[in-house]
Image (tube, rainbow over all chains, first blue to last red; front, side):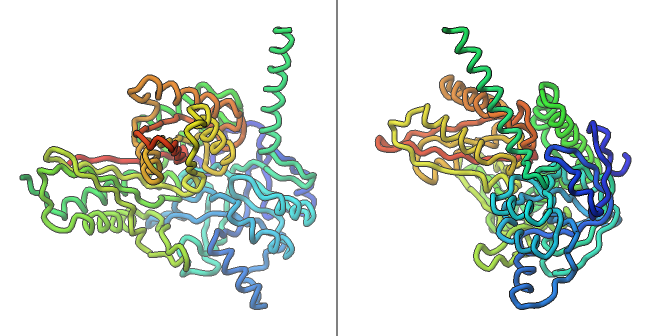
Length: 206
Length: 278
């Protein structure tokens, strides 16, 4: 199998990460992208530790300005593997910490599931986007990772911070700079369909 | 009396843990294929293709289907004619420890307060029941918590009736949105007491996917809930379409005249489970 095969998807835009200046503004909620480049990882414990460093006035292990943070806690790699299963974890658990990282210049997050209103507002204010990867496709997504280096918090195991080199990693833009939210758009369009069916039924009965 | 060495139980549990993480059962795969074939949204169809390819890679290369290899939930039905030589509970825990270690599975179990990882994925959550016979049946369900976190329980008033039950379950799944990795499998426990309903909801997940309840009225309720969930249009990964849930399984138990407990245990599409009978 080809690394990071995205042949199943139609209308995929290939995009480099971290996003180059000006690219973020072109992304729209619902866009399908194929990411290639470098990302950092972090999940619950990683965020707690980053916050502890900030609280203590200490520098973070990496400058997150302009970077993409992928919410993932990979399974251990077998000998010869780059990484174990490496799909997204649910993003709302990071909501409590995200605004603070956006203030430091983080420009993108990648996970799955909806973000809080607070985070969505903060993303628009700071010029950041949120993307979703295919949840539960950990084996498939492990094939989109070319390199995995430990950055910090080794003792946190799967919750350590890693730097990943990814290639043709599929993702859907959920929140864009215009305030668009793809999950909301899906829910609203379904509501519109149901309402229009209701109106048709109403006409037929009256 | 039939004797089973505890070491054999450890070995069996270890294999269940390692296999469950990497191989989806045929009923799950068939359900995902059926979902793909009836999918109305192009994006969601692509998502389902990825999930099928993911299952194939996982099984061939022994990579976990999902990096969240879960808390190991182990159901044990111990025949009363069986004598276990050694410590049954310790044997199960040792099997889980060894399986997660040797299978390169993620250790996700931690202290709820300090959040300190136990480093072994133990303790597993074990449910033991004595049954007639001389067999030992073990089912291991590695339960990911993206979906587990979306579960819920309500002590409804009996006046809520079956309509109230349907509304509660559908609303739980709707509110969960894309968090639990739809298409989901929905386990519902109805009746009993507070803890009985929760356990029934989890047991409901063990039923072969899509097999209706033996009681016709319960089976109809399952179909009704499934149709309502899929009409929300949230779909695969919250990307739209008609496959928000693969199945709804409901288990029931008599309850108190004052009570109508309903528990919803949500399971992700990576519905991993393995079984052995010793």
